[in-house]
Length: 397
Image 1 (cartoon, rainbow, N blue to C red):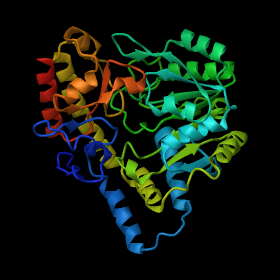
Image 2: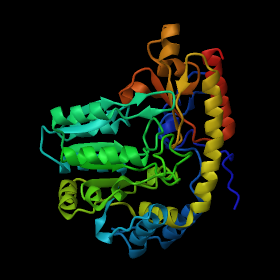
Image 3: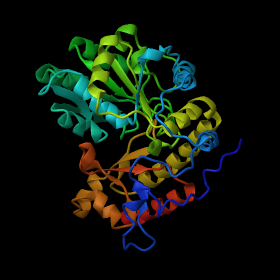
Image 4: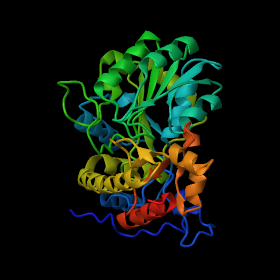
């Protein structure tokens, strides 16, 4: 089938958080919003068809997961990742961020540390505090090839902080790295060494744009390796969080799930949810089933389109003096280092500067990295080209 990702879907003036942010902007033509991580594409046709069918039923009482919805998750994990999971391992959630918060409450005690590496998706920094935990962190490092772990520093932070939970983002938001098998094993070994649970946010698993920039010799080609598939022992200390929301652009339908093989850890997770986390709504469940079972063609076409968008972003950033970005292996997010540009032009906040030039980007300070900006290229090509023209104008390139 042919899918038209160039089609204009009007989001201004709707309930879109992304587009409402700059609704009152005085910038001529309005600020182009490329910040929060949702795409401007309509959901896949099979998802829309499944939703219409469910709506036609007309009754929206309390729902529970159906056998076919559970089978959709099991089949997806087996087909895409060769991971055979049991139905009881699945814990349904109304969103991935709630899963991060539940994990912080389910592991350890109040006052314990939760580890993560920066820069990182902002809820990784806020969830521990909301759960009466402390954040312990170490920075990722960057070389000419991309973003990397500083494992000796991570080991030292884990030792001194005595963190009980390791919050991992894989593929990584905002840098776009897909951690390779060697890196995943080093994370797993640190978790075993320090007797930690790993909560692995793998929501961008369906958005692999290129092979990891570093693969150990002899490792198989491919994109995403789930941390929990390294070994049964690693699976037993891992909470894997996933959702169709990013890949299939249905975040507003609020459906995610955790895969927790270990029974005791799963009970702790469910106990932390009790009375606080609502069940997943019926439409989110229906959309998830369709997304995970009959949307492979749409997903493949989306990835091709996003690769074209990424190339356009790479060209624009490479030509802009003072801006830099490392290879994006996954997601539809470009993590741009604007520190040199800001220093050369006396700019204290690059995000605000670009807003003043009609370009709405995420502020790196929210990710623990002031001076960076995050650009969402999950939009139609013509709008992206207009945004990149504003980027060129703002940087004099």
